[in-house]
Amino acid sequence: MNSVANKVAVVGSGSEHFEPTLSFSGAVCASILARNGVSVTIFESARGPGGRMSQRREVTEEGRELVFDHGAPYFSVSNAEVWDLVREWESRGLVAEWDENFGAFDCISHKFLGIQQEGLTKKYVGVPGMNAICRALCQETGVESKFGVGVGRLEWLEDENLWSLMGLDGQNLGQFQGVVASDKNIVSPRFTNVTGRAPPLDMNLVPGMAVKLQDIPVIPCFALMIAFAEPLSAIPTKGFRVVNSEVLSWAACDSSKPGRSATRYVPVCCILNKFMERNTQFSRGSAFPGTSIAREEKCLWEKNKRLAICGDFCVSPNIEGAIVSGIAAASKLSSCW
Image 1 (cartoon, one colour):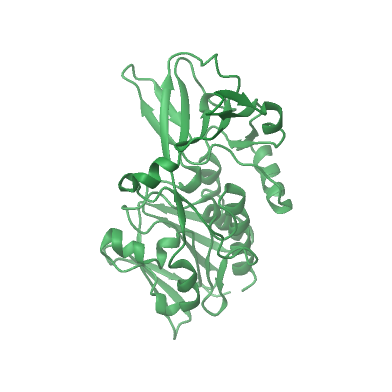
Image 2 (spheres, rainbow, N blue to C red; image 1 turned 180 degrees about the vertical axis):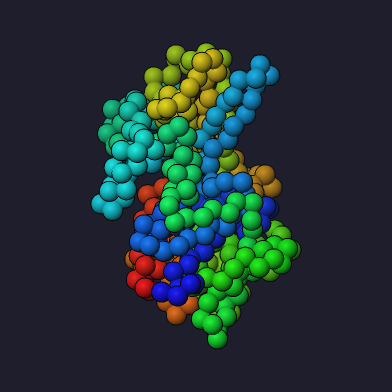
């Protein structure tokens, strides 16, 4: 390999207008590439990785810190490759099983249902927060993370057979043999609608990808974070789905998760969905993909330009789908050398 042949850029959000999108898929991909001897540089405009694993910290008037997992509350595993990674993360103390009672609440009967059935599938959480896994993967040997740096332009240098990345203010971010994007807005017209700038990636360079990424239907959602001074003893579960509701989808007691601390306040996070369909002006991109655009391939891949786009929108709208897509993107890039 020459000095740039083993360099790959993993690109998250290209603008502060979007939520942190250096997602689980991008972090997983970066980690696997680094372990395969590929030098990886992560670019993300936010202060840290986020995506589905986002966490929110708030401080009460008394100065006590509250921590909410306002992205994915947990994840489950069925894929063999994902199982291998989760076992490793568990051995490193990054992941633990959330072994509590779970159920469903029926808004018509006002009763909790199926508590035993809901708890049959193992549920895993990051420790001490959901974003702990992403942060650890971004610090792997061989991975250089540049947070607070948005990518404004990706240019394909035909003569050099390389990618050139430029920042939002035009600074040169370097040349790379391959690029992985974990943000579907990289070629989406939505980027222009929100920022007034052209998308970082010229759609004419990857017309096949652009067609698939242009109009991904989404299911908007909203997270309501609440802290109670005392445990909610009337609720028999630590997490529950809500059925027959036009607003609420899921609620969970975050302080019941492994590695969390709740000396006084009990953080509870609720996911609302139908509310957002009627109030889309409150949404800043918090949504679940309504379809899978690369279910068989598990990521979008342009072999001639060594460009991969990965994320839960490629496989399935959950954490496991994001991990599977990140693994696939890493495999595609690793096969180039």
